[in-house]
Length: 474
Image (cartoon, rainbow, N blue to C red; front, side, top):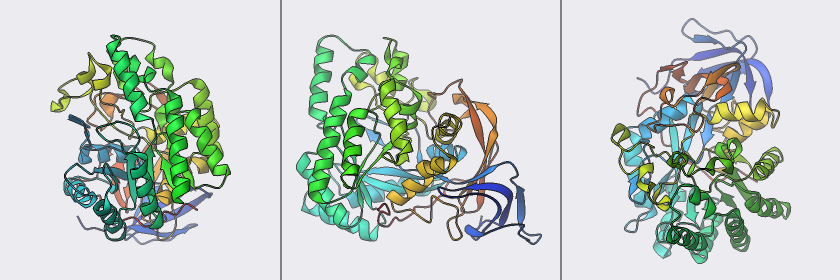
């Protein structure tokens, strides 16, 4: 297959970007959006797709996914191949995954290792954040090199998981200074790791082993405390900061205040925090291990604050934190999945799937319920993540010269979500049996038709690594 698809004219669709909403023809040619206009004339060699009644959206950009990510003794069950195929069927054409710096190697080694695995497998375009677990002079040099020569301009650090991922405040501060000076972004997982660790040990010592104690040992106040601390470190470092998976008003209130003070603080939430609340944990049944993600689900009241923040741009992104582990041990051969924690909640791998249902679930609960506009929907799922992580305007919008990553979305039909119809390796979806409004009809990656209804037209290796520049957030 040549790198350039044949030209395609999308006729008479309703083009929605973060700022636009109009009916037009869109010509995809040579991998980019070539022309946008009314009643475009094209030759016989151009494939014409009638998009009457459909939304023409920029391909989704999901800047928080975990494919083949090692978590303690286990690994997420989606490969780069299965995870990016699921993303494509869900209308996402670019993901930013994670390269993990191990005890032995440098950020550069982590990038090379992730790229080696991804290159032959990815069905859509991808970038990488590097998870930094250790900071010294050499690491800071490597980070600088990665930003200028490897197209990796964002890094992630953890204030949680002591002894595994957690970095101390000084290490986070050094990274903020270094990354900020070069126009990149540090993403932070904000929870007070050492206090949470103590609460977990106390719960287990008292004989509390069921999954519900995951939520009880990760209180929102500890997310709030760490978020406040991260903001102050960023303020001192004079660097922007990005908080991943914000779940609670305890965290949000510090973000809102900092933004009001003019501090460059950015944050995402995830669909599961908008779709579910902590009432799902009211059981000792192991089934609720499927809701064991970090941070855990919060209260109805927290949800109201998240919706408000999404409306008023105190939260800029809705990413999935797609981190899939099977509920049934041995599904597709995967071992050490959720069942690892059946006698000890602290051993349940933290994470939930969601990459394939992001767009349709947010359209259903956001746009259809009047929580945000179509433009804001596109901004949250494509444009803002692309801007914040150095992908815009190549990704995240429909404009002349942008990559021809286009989703045709039908707002008029419903679908009932079932795990068996989805394309991830994971054996469940949090949305099992739920009927949602809207459906992805066709997906183009750089002009190639990769999803056509239920039919897969893509191929592994068609996706490319996208080098990213400075953040474009201010």
